[in-house]
Length: 340
Image 1: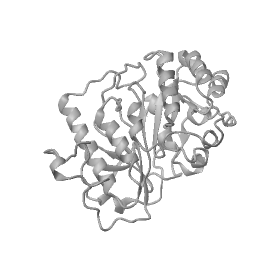
Image 2: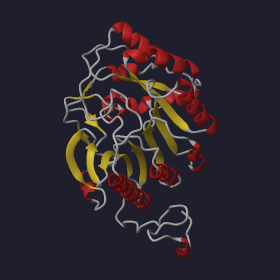
Image 3: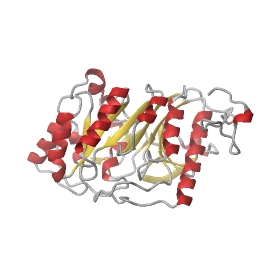
Image 4: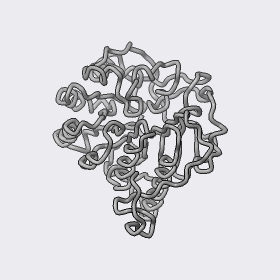
């Protein structure tokens, strides 16, 4: 960040572009440490009312929005201060890109040289011209299409705008049976280089025929179709990947409640180590992608946070179909179906 004259700063210490001076850098940071953070602040409001999402059309109070903004700004300050590599995936309960502070945070983080990638899950309901201010070598979007909430042409237009701007992004849809025609249409109309993933619908058991139909859209659908047995398997969460909430509480992931410490007093660092999963199964992509035995770091190499397979990044074409699997219906969890 370029230095800014104090005379141009407001009462909150921000300059005329909304930025703060970087806080002092801790002396004991390990320059070789690479840390991926899944950040989820207090924000829970959304502008959509999808029937399969528990947070549809929820409204945050002005006080809650101010608290979310303050928490996010504190987090950005922390990332800016680090001497080691950091990548961030924002996984908000609600829709974040309708809030200016999230757009500003993405732009600022993308411009930090030690940030490898900054990505966010979004319904893409907001305009995308703000991405022009970001470093597109580091920014990425994980977008979800909700057919009941937005016209096909409007969503497709936003996707084409992102392509024209050179923004990295994936597109997804929840595999509700009634969404199949819309998903097929979207896949046909999207540029070939855009990956369209499918999340298995909550509680739905897919027949072989249904799975085949969804796999024709997303060759990697088998990974989402059934939960992954995970107890005792080595997982990168709690070692090189952590979950952080608005208060700075650090957990290994969104699904294991045990705390490792706090981000802002550095107490979490002592708890970082290789470990195995304590849960019977993992059915959310932002969880099971980090399970080492699944090999998904190879499948999504170069696009892990934004959910873009390596084959798409290399060729702009669809990857080969994943092996078909059979299993029970998906169970409940702590991720909305579009964020799995």
